[in-house]
Image (cartoon, rainbow, N blue to C red):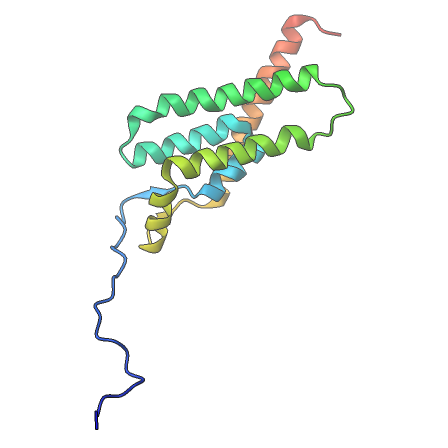
Length: 152
């Protein structure tokens, strides 16, 4: 009769996740969505570009900025031409989903691996504060444009 324990775990080598680089601090994909909600797609582009720079992928930063600013301009133009009966959610949700999907495409697996290796992430409060600054800057620019245009 065989004396092996049928409940014994197999003698296989377990794959441990490799430890994350503790000097690397990233923004989560949720942070990208929060920043886009508070500070438009331009703030989302800023945080995506910060992650890319931290990962050593500086060559992709200009494309991210063009996408963020282009999305902001497209939504602004759409808001100007569409009738007022269109609900505001139409102008809020697509940029959030778009920037989140773009972030997942660019560095989603790296962020998941970073989190699995107990890597560091920036606080969402930091993201909210910086995004609020983007919103205030945008409001200041729009206010100045309205004053300069003489719109009454």
